[in-house]
Image 1 (cartoon, rainbow, N blue to C red):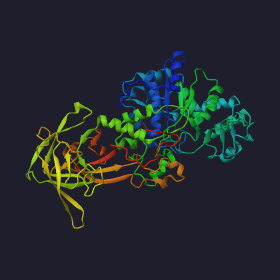
Image 2: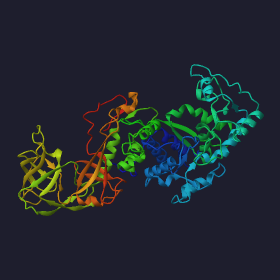
Image 3: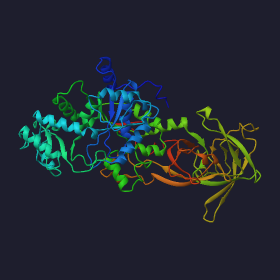
Image 4: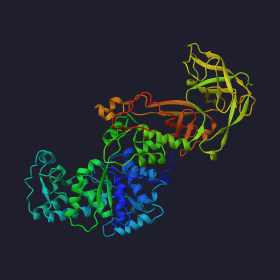
Length: 600
């Protein structure tokens, strides 16, 4: 895997705009933002946006604000706020954490104090005493901006229900129907809006709408709602408010208050950009104003990323929670053992374009394997043990063999592994009646035991049901490294663990959650859940894994990459399989799907 920090940053149309703006002296440095709504956990699609926004700040000496667009109290929760903070800090750790824009705890930024806040977030060493930005911090300012639009005759209070407003909006080929309250006087609108704020009216009784153009070809410009009544407690402001701004109204003004220069959104917000500009321009605010840019969101095969669908997976018990390692959430990927470097390498380099496409999940898996191959410590483990006895060694035979910790990293060194005559190998590494080109162990056949001897299978022991329970073998005692027959060639090499010293652990073998590349296209995404997405086995591992640490990544040789799970307890270790060594889906999935970006 290329070192992302050392490699040249990517080039795309958004970075070209930033570069041109800085060259023209439009801004001293860029200010971007990552503004999730705290109504769910972040997923890998958000990772693309995080890496774009923080990447631009990192490359051009700017800052990226972490802001919660928390304007919908009925769907948002402190749990999501805390998870998002954790995920963002984990993903940018050591890469762009110096670009993380926070504010002094308890402060409410204002346009007037913009320079102070930017100096604070770019000059600090750590985030002690700082917190993310919240759109809800600006509710008072946003209310005053709405009052100013009313005074300018640009907004009015409407008594139509949400259903009526939606129906009267029309369609792209049909002109909208104006509200019967569109021409209320400024005085009446100011009075009604103040009474809305005071809590005089029930939910849904009235809204504040912009007065734009009910015949606009862009339906989002047909008198959109700016405020609605919701008597609900807010996770950040409590019960102080009963009217809440819409995303479109709060978003552009939050960008303005924070001094954001480049407001980067996904393509579905392209049709909202005229409203973004209209609100800022009709308030006659001091320049410069932020500008919105759009890029294509990440779509990944074998994955769903709708928050509604992810929540259904959790609610219906299909997965164990938002951090289930089968989930595409950042917390799930972290628990699975994916590193922030691998996610950044993937998200930072898949490209920023203006057209939607479907990225093959194999591209992500390639980035994960490439990263783990460089960093993972090698260890011996057997997932499905089969007993093997070497008959030409004494029953109490033990010897230390040096095993390599990571062949990709000489500095990782070696470790001693105790070899004996009672071993376990993988059940899959023996076949009594093998097919052609089967190079593992068979009756009368030879293989090399990793780091040790060449052995020959002499006898197969079965139980009463005819199942193979033990193999009796002889070893070529001169075939170990340094021995007279060490250079003798055999076609197969298999791994093993010492039966007398092996440590039992629980291994959770995770796989793709869906069986088809586009579960969203099936009509019922839950009908294509992979029944084999999780298998739990009791494995046997070399003793070194008893000292496994959560921050370490391990390659169980010939099996895959694993990480210690938080469920682990002293004497009862649990490992999650991050990914197999090779793509086991390559032989069964359709290739060259239209619109799918394939792995190299």
